[in-house]
Image (spheres, chains in turn yellow, brown):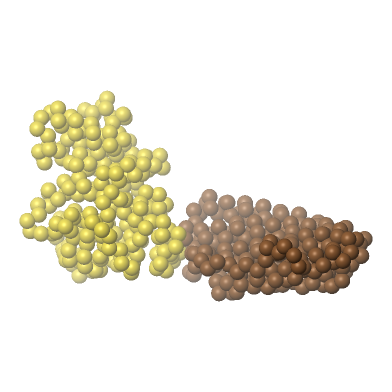
Length: 258
Length: 234
């Protein structure tokens, strides 16, 4: 695979191996992810893209049999260092999941929860401001401002997902991980979330796992193709979708048997 | 290249490719018949070339519609996308060549009543034959996905250009010798220019084949042999 070293990467992974018990799920992945860029991870089911995404904020720590080796640095800081508090790390590296999973609380509390536990607001006025800013950034403010006290679970699917995005960005993260954020949404809600991802790019490094080739092509600037635990090809999205180097990438993106 | 998981997608792409090759065959024969009708002064044959051009135009429409349908329904990427773009370009170039052949046939109908210009009919026919061979090889290269063969076709355009240069000088000479030759020579010169342009279009298509296969347009400047623009005197 060609050298993809970049200047000042936001995330830098070297020789990353992940095992679930005896299962070698990620095989020696080296990748550098840029700041203020949307990077898409694509590949068939079970190729390791979600596993690798979850390494970036140590979500795999919660799985007993999961073992991660190698080095992952964010801003030159090793996130697997013993001194790193995973809870602090996850405030810096936010995550949005496949299924919208708002807390069974009000819309306001969903967004205010993170800033509260991380002590990002000194008083109610500051908290109000953080909540409004996050909801505005997530393009949900206009729809939610008159019903901040109603339960988050009462929103539509697309609104719930934008609420989860608002919740993730309320702690002022630097990296936003998204694991198939649109797979449970209709085309309109998907377009809204994609538009949002494009705006979030101005402030964050966004990494998105998606099964939709078209979505990867639409929202990302860089694309990484995973296959059987290997990072097969990582390049500019335009290159991956017009003239990829590896025949496995070509087969996968054009809907052929790999 | 392996097949698509969706076999209907493969069938769609193959169906379009078949249409392109069919159109190519019709254009190939239009070139040959147009030059033949000139040499044999066969007005009926010239008339047939003119009439058949409608079929070529209709085929281009059909290819455009099929290609648009595949783009809309399949959202092709990478090689598939390049193959659809190539189809559109090739169909457009073939249609232009068809028009040139039709124009030659029109002039043939006019030329039958004029005295022949010694040797020029046969020379034009040789030139047309060379272009039709280039077209045939280009279509083979397209079908096989053979970029080397396409590059070879691209290089051969120089020969056509040289034939055109020679004819250009010849027509000038005839016109200077006897002004009564001017009308016929003007028509013949337009025909030669038509064939020369056909060669350029075949070269364009060959480059498109190279793009489809490799993902990149050939960088090397294409050989240019038409020097008549710089010709101020014989």
